[in-house]
Amino acid sequence: MTTSTTLEHQPKRVILRLRVHDFEGCNSAEYNDAIKTYLAYARRPTSELEENRHYAHIEPLQHYELQQTSFHIILDVDKDSLAQPNMQSLPHEVYHVRRDEQGSLQLKPIQNARIEKNLLLRVREFSDTLYAWAK
Image 1 (cartoon, rainbow, N blue to C red):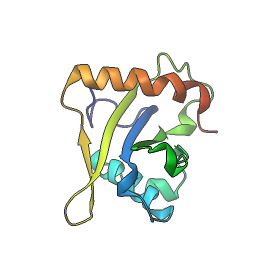
Image 2: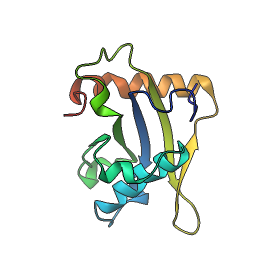
Image 3: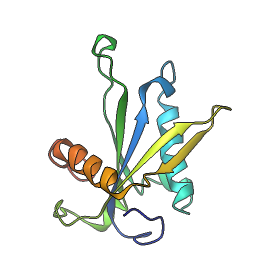
Image 4: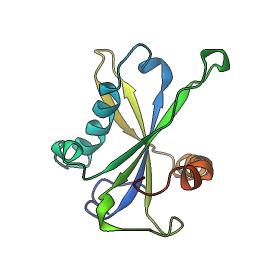
């Protein structure tokens, strides 16, 4: 189960699941805002992003004809703490990032443990192989 305090300052991989329509027409700075939303939720300074303490892999958006509804930001937290981690034993967390009615980004933990586990398994099928740690 994901928590914001269990592994607060240990290396881990955080998967942010975002809706495409929340980011249509936005520039790449909006992706940084999504990462900062996670950092604030985890009670970490948002300045850690500019300090390059973490590494972000941003899933490219597909052509609009494919009707993609979501995409992911894979965040390698405390990236310099590990050189080549064993991805199978590395802690992983997954969250939804959504815009509220005012347009602000909100992080939403997944409440249902079964849904969370299934989502992690599906995303890790590609993220663990396509996105090397901190590269």
